[in-house]
Image (cartoon, rainbow, N blue to C red; front, side, top):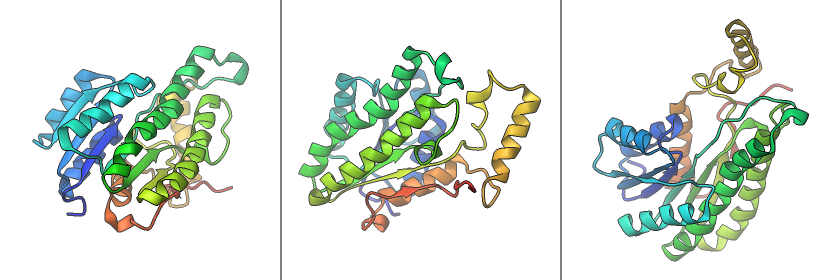
Length: 254
């Protein structure tokens, strides 16, 4: 029961990774969870699937300051503190060359992944400082450690996340606030979604096979694999770890 007596907030909580993480948190004895997402119906469905009295939800657009402050304030009002903040909210982008990439799409993607992370940190930090520290986990992707053609916004946002981790890890040190990030490649059950408009079903299969051959263990990580790592980083078992990046066995060969 590694999360006993802890409180967690999960943005993107209605998504597959958010749901798997919430389920794992409950298995590890967490006292309370606030799921945050922009889609209320999906949040209600997530609550039903978890079937837990310790799980609540809040509708918010993480790219907006007012919404971000509101979900942090809701967690404090409901539970009195935040021990774990898992910034998992995400927005898929189209696969397009630089010249064809639309400004609106670029702004929307960075609004969620860059500004959304910054706002979550901005409003959670004062409470974590006040109540004795905590653990923040940012869900990034492999594009934050390397470049990928035709994924301009995705690569930009993830490199930004890496900078956020390093800066805030230093700022969090005096108050025992740890900041870490995970950098998965596309997961097996979500691999092809961004490529649907580019490749045919047959080609998608070849793309998936090609990705798999570049993974050392030739194994596609699952939502549960991500959830296990987030649980470790949220628990006191990782109390000496901050400013680190984890690839969830997703490291590519050169």
